[in-house]
Length: 269
Image (cartoon, rainbow, N blue to C red; front, side):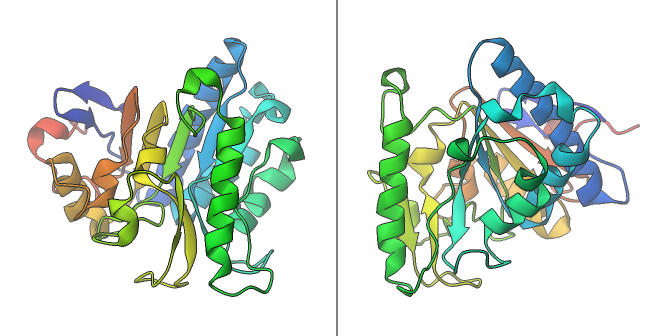
């Protein structure tokens, strides 16, 4: 499987020929993430990772938990954050935190003090999402270092999924969140896909990441992938605005890469 290659137009995605698209891409991304975590720890730092939900995001975490290289990482010295969360009661199976704990965190010797989930609905209803967003923004600010030059830690890797219409995290096209330029975390109401109330990092917060990895599989994502890599604006296609300060990786299978121009598609043997 060829690695992504930097191009003048961005990052050329790796393509996958496996019939098990999600499993193959998740396994490859998990192996790549282990390497990145080991490199950061070898440099004497505690890696900061932003987790994502969804099918491929959860599959990636499962591969991390059970993969052969899991022992290479000192999991007690990894910081875990979330890019967005569904504002539901604690332990709800639809919460990204619940899925991440079941897939990864409950299986590894992580330090609970280094796991930073977003707030849950403890009875407030949708209005409580505003307080949850403010609390998470305050948490990020507390964990930011002077060298981060802002109210958000410089995440080493931010994992993101995307929707067929171009949303990422819980920033949807033409929504109030996509226009946010000052706040790092916002409550999102009236989401076009359930549940309607969420908490999400904003695009400016995501762009504080050293590396952003966008995971996508299937032909339903192909048009949005092509538009994002072709220069679409972030208001219409928020995933186009999720970029890392050093690197942005698009980790795609063959179907998701199907509509890319030839110069952005690697040769597949």
